[in-house]
Image (cartoon, rainbow, N blue to C red; front, side):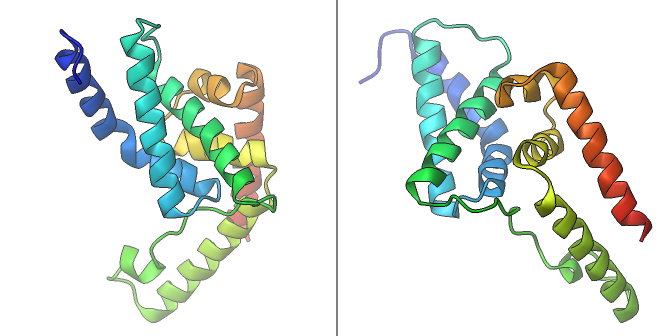
Length: 172
């Protein structure tokens, strides 16, 4: 049942859902959730967001809020699923689908490069990997710090270390 005067809030939630659904789903999938669980987490996040805004709570940094709640719910779901092992990145399209104009040797070189980078990303500590994924989704350092509940300097340090590590992989 609609609360009188809540229609604009519902439209705002729909707009936010449209804007953040795919990036949030990619992020929670990168945390190791199956797609069905990821979809559930996304739905829970936006239900919580609706309740948060309906109660008149702060509207500052809603993107960071959405990712922080999604991050926490995804970790809880992963624990319920019994996934205590190392995180794995989200599935990505095969290299051939990304660059169909390349010849077979270029495909092979690209596939090997991609494998090295994915292996290096999987070897990263969980917090560094989460920082990288959140930055890839367009979050600013301050938002990443809020999502992961670490300092702004910690985000900067981790991303710098991570990018240096990945660039060394690129050199080989």
